[in-house]
Image (cartoon, rainbow, N blue to C red; front, top):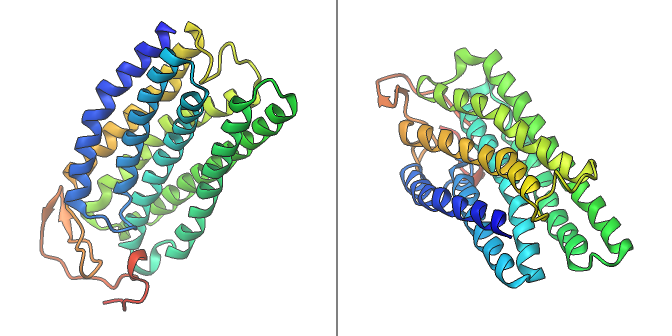
Length: 281
């Protein structure tokens, strides 16, 4: 199990410092539900927990550690997709009447929640009792459904990104970089989702598998899974530090140019998701 240990150590070396950096980004921007930065913390946290579980699994062959490791992989996929969605929500919310309704973002939270539940149940059925063919088959079906749900949200990310570009003149100047950051990460997310689809649909676990301890599947997992998430994290951390924080009181994003505040007339915006009872200003 040397390969899985090496990959896990690499994960911990990268994602633990990234976790601390993500916490600083959240501290800078606040913890409002519509900001999306909290998901950046979750990506790093899930990878750290997953790395620890993989090392425990390598030394103890514990089924519980293996299941937790597989669940963390699914959670990491979900978190990168929802980080992008959260940043798109901030961009769209600053566009006034031209932005996508906040109700759409609320609805898009449901596939992710369902996908996480299916991931937990599916991983437990597949890995908890692999000798039971019925349990294995139902578990794989649940994992397939989970990945399809995550894919649905990813497609929504693409559609909303395209909408923002079509209405880019309404995007606040200081938030263009958020839109560009999401756009740049979409191809890396595509590779990450493609990897999950191959793992559950292709039935070639000697190549595409997160629980096969052979060198080749571990290498593929490292390149198509872990590396893609790491690249996404680096891009979002960079844009998080470079982008000005949003007002926590009024829900208005201070107009910015390259992260610096400048004077500009305020526009009417919708109430933030975390304060639906508040009136628009």
